[in-house]
Image 1 (cartoon, rainbow, N blue to C red):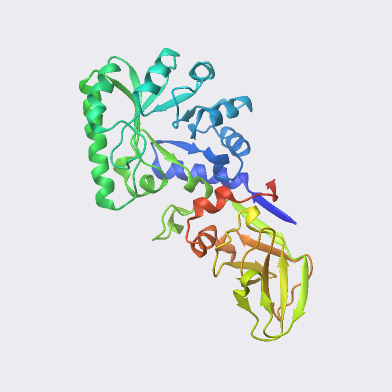
Image 2 (cartoon, rainbow, N blue to C red):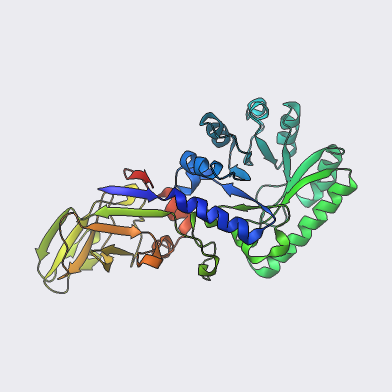
Length: 353
């Protein structure tokens, strides 16, 4: 009745394509937040099967869960608290992205071997501030570490300014006697846009899942395939007269006698309640969702189109096949594809292809 279909072969194909696009740089595959809703363990295993360079997650709990699932590849995490179990991180060979002195001291005391220092080059989130660079690198003098930051994707000019600050941080580190094992600045958008920012490694998340990292331009030239397909089915059909109100608040009323189809996929499955103008594919035709999305369901006015009980409803999938995209669903709700795929699911069954 409700399925989230994830094509693991496409994950592997996208990873290989990203590797080819940014060669010779390594590619860290980002599988945080349950692999952007695609299934962290399943995606990590599919990538390990093709010798992924490294896996990236947000926190230590995610990293340890991957180790517990048998994943042996390099794993890095970077949202950390000084109270985290860094002895476990050291034991499990997990690499840590460090952004403050408290975490750095705790990680060093626990014997963590692989540390990456994050410097804030302008995003204003985690990372050592410019005024702290000298102190932190002096503390690490003689050690070999990774160095990383994250772009804001505000504009080309801002991205290039961030790159210059990143290079400045590199010089401060080298002058302090620090050795750098890997530098990584770019995520999917930066890695595809700026060859100079690829360094020894890039971090690819949204591109890995075949989705567009930009809101204002296409990405077809990169030949990345959407991995997730959200589908349901028609469970009720009825003929109604003109003027029939549909769903809460009657945001939609029928203009003439028509057929309404009920689809059991609501905001509890991650379908945005505030979506306006979102389209779904039923029996080979795109229809706009009629009225407000409810907790468990939504309604589609299918007119006189031939729709049957059990007809497949594609909520999003591969636009190359005429299906609605996660980008389009996000736009209908004033959000982005990242949020759509990360929160989609609920009672929907995940099926791995």
